[in-house]
Amino acid sequence: MDWFRSYHDAPIDPKWRVIARDAHCRTGEVAAIFWRLLDLASQSAERGVVFHDAAEREGRISEIAASYDFEESLVGGVIAAMERRKIILDGRLPTWGERQPKRNDDSSDRTKEWRRRTRGVTDGDAPVTPRGDERREEERESILPMTESTTARAREPARIIVDRFLEEREKHWPRDSRLPAPLMTLLTQAKNYLAQGATVELCAEVIARVARRKSERGETRPPTDLGFCVATMETEIGKLKRAATTLREVPAAAPAGPERGDVVWRGRLEMWLTKGTWFDRTWNIGDCPAELLQEFDLQLRAKPPPGYRQRA
Image 1 (spheres, rainbow, N blue to C red):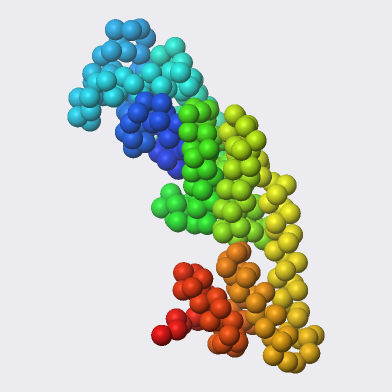
Image 2 (cartoon, rainbow, N blue to C red; image 1 turned 180 degrees about the vertical axis):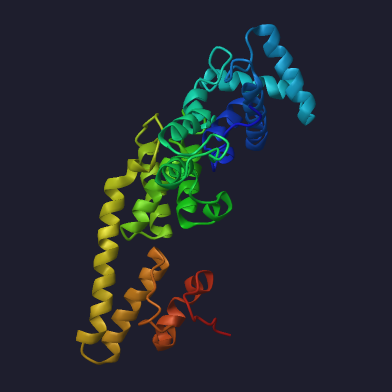
């Protein structure tokens, strides 16, 4: 076989940051070395094996270093870090069988079974792979982990939230080498928060606040996923929804008058500056009292809402 599977977002999996920190190198260097290890494991007579003994291990280090123009000490440090974290175990990649299932690597068994069930068609006339519902189901199973492109996902709100979580882990627990949850898990959790009504700004603020609180309390184990702040997140989402409902209803029910307008617009500006929420269809910044615009001028310059024009 001349190929192996590589799943979306695998080159930027958060665990490479941990390995890079352990090996005192760059994350990209770790990813490059691991993909060469995957290549070697795929070509091995026993697929999944990287090396069998210490001598072969040293040979792999020299080979990879020469391939990338890396120092052998760098490659050796990365492989040693991977061994400590059980990414390499006894010279093999322990997740190889899970990530590279043989059942989908060879279609011969499927073809034989399909031909057996197809009557009145000779082997010479039969297509080499099944069609219809069975084929579509096989294709669906093989692409489930790869539903979106890495480029598009890297720019989406969920990825911004995940990156903030990883930054807070490294900020408050810089010396801890325990791995976070897989990237797909973190992205799913971030999307769930957004689906519940959170904004990117709210998620970032809650993650930073809860991580800081845990660190200040002396907790030595870093959070592994975004579930560590779920209680606080749900509370803040509830507050955000209640505030949004109140501000939407106030203009219709409130009596006319400059004082009431000031109260409403102050709440709107504070919601924008603290939560990043703005209702374009009903909130026109041009209707905001001039006195409030002057009072919030510096903050609005730093974070202008839609339609805001800076004062001369």
